[in-house]
Image 1 (cartoon, rainbow, N blue to C red):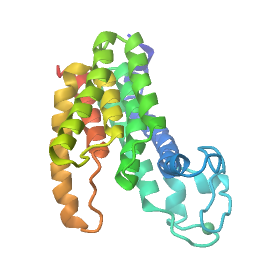
Image 2: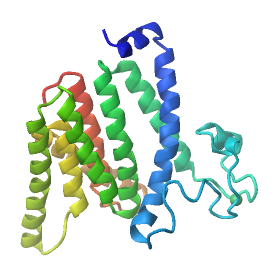
Image 3: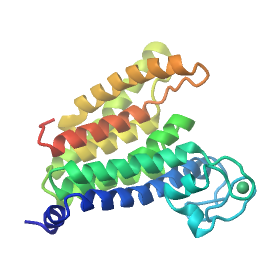
Image 4: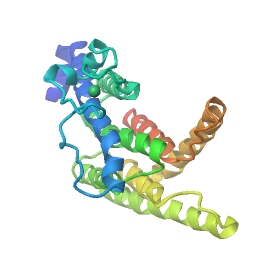
Length: 265
Ligand SMILES: [Zn+2]
């Protein structure tokens, strides 16, 4: 019996709560990643990075005190506004923290084994900012898709959930399948239907889930993409999202979760 299982059995409700708190802290950092990485990729280098400048109000520049930077709590205490200039703090930052906290807490409570929980947390910590950045900017930065791919290969070099060969073939097949689709679509219609970021993201998901899972990942992504397209199309006609990244991310999480529960995909 592993220490993880012992902790979980000794504290049946404490462990998911602790994981939820860890999730809120991670979510707070993921919010910073989602806010800052597009600027770091598109603008001149050196203007900002994930650690510099320290958290501050983008309008009045006032640096945040420790208590103004506590995940979930600070947004509620400040009622979503900067203490000094009363500018609204984006509600999405609060939602990212809340979502990550719930995701970590629920997965800690229900996932069958520790490898599965930590793999899922690591994968989600890349996919959540990727989905948000692609949603807002139609961009899947290499600085997130590539470490995600390497992390998937590395994990399967050491765990026994998936043979490393399946992970490696998954990465290659994931990239090539969308690359071929891109060129077929482009030659047939003269238009670009996908971006290179999508190929790299599916390569990363192939590394995590294995080549056998690729058809299911693409199917789930396409179906949720169709549902999403028509839902958001009706909701907001000014913001027609054509990003595939959020749906690929969702499909990756769904398939990895199903695999942890023993579904052979
Ligand atoms: Zn301010």
